[in-house]
Length: 401
Image (cartoon, rainbow, N blue to C red; front, top):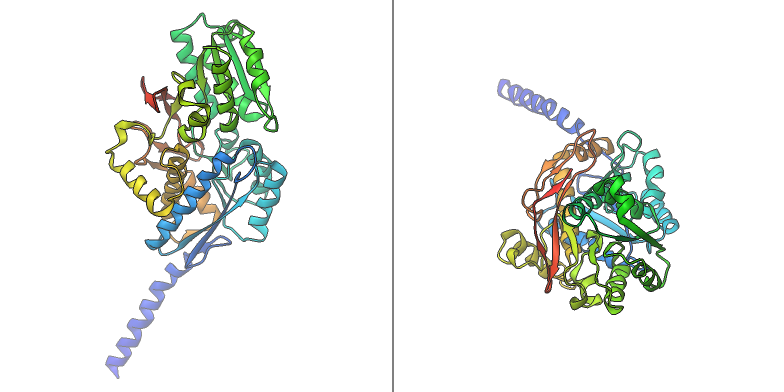
């Protein structure tokens, strides 16, 4: 009897010891012992459909992760809905994700105008809007929007890098600027002017033009900008329009020093459709390893990415840097969720998003992810690249904030 009593007492003590661990489990809607259900919107159709491959790469990454057991024993279910790059549709689809699909948070939805339209709704409902796929400065405002955080370098940082480079190497340049008529476009131009300095910007920028995502082409804008006599084109456009601008600039015989925003610097989605010979010498910037760059051919991280693509996303292009981006963003989220442990409440998910200090194998050397409660800009540095042959070739040093 005494032996039985000791055994019963031991069981009771063990049960009491286990109880706090069980109590520590905190779950957001969409989270269970077996699953973490998350949502996003992507432009799988519409004028920005070239970016849709980012969502497909992320879906493939989570399929790979789930095959290996998920994160802390939980499978990741990503519900990825098409919003056609239309803000009203984004709002409708995001409400569906939160109110019907019961997701824990929104991950890596794409677009500036499409992200802004749901930012207040998500913050009012205290739903994390994680690693939004846009470089607008909107995603780094923890004081006013504590449930929203970006991922990539912001557009002002990138624009300033180009401005500083141009001021150093061609201070007498006459600059023509084309940008998308939205907050993302204005962010780029603001950063570019900051890099030049306002006095130089007023002297050097001789012409500007804008476009709407509903425009059929940029042909008339490019012809108008050529007429300004500019020797430099600062081209802030998304993939479809970037390809048009590169092609038109070449076809009319205009040969400016050409700066192209990183969000359009895709070989397969932009440079090839434009015509590789028409994009030679264009300058852009990168923060991720380029799958087309020969220096990364034998890089272990790039080999791992290619193996992933071959097995889990075989229809995806091995030449498309957007697929590298989707993979790297999904890796970042996986680390965040590991940090959460069993506290998968929305509050802790956001806390961990603001507590990152890590590198990723596909980030360029010298670039790191870091966040804090007052710093919602995970990646802050880039490196200039120039298009040569069939690839972007890095030059200069890593720079940024």
